[in-house]
Length: 107
Length: 163
Image (cartoon, rainbow over all chains, first blue to last red):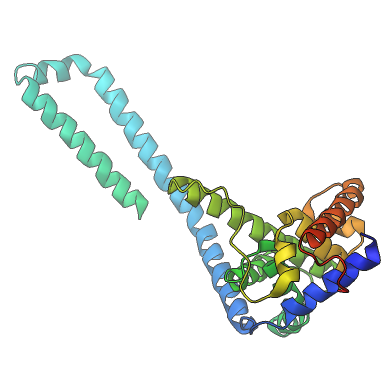
């Protein structure tokens, strides 16, 4: 197919395409763009705070792990007499705390 | 760009862009959403309202990206829903004639190439920029697209009909 023939077919197709339906309102698109821009600006402002929150969480977790490691023999001595039930309770507390943190930071 | 400039630009470009999206995506129902998405992406990029041709080229680039993103999303959804139909796009809108049906049988990129070249009258370098292709490839791909369109028209008994 030569170029002029292709152009003629495409012109016909463009005519068929232009004659169908009403287009969305440009004012609505403009308004949505402004809204998204405001949301972007808010997210930009909140970003450093979000990073600080996560950083504080990491510091807290590392501190707890280091303290536990340093006093491991004491913790073991405390938990051993109580047996499996206390270990299960301790595990449950850690999980609940993790979920609570996830909930708080997920907001 | 202020709202007045945008509205004028929209009225100038939207009808043709809507046709482009409709024909290249092959999805008449999603065309309005894709049109809005294209203009939203365009506005968020904060274009300078000086070079009209560059703005229009960028608009077509964002529209093409929006169409591709939609295809990818649909493919992912089909995969997750275990609906392995391997269809590239939705069927063409009903009641738009044989020419439209023939056009939908081309590959999406071929449809975009033909539209940009022969409806928008873009030069090869502009098409390359819009579709993220190499300028040298455009000539070859366009030749193939014309060849395939001719073949499909012939198969559908339209090759002897005047456009």
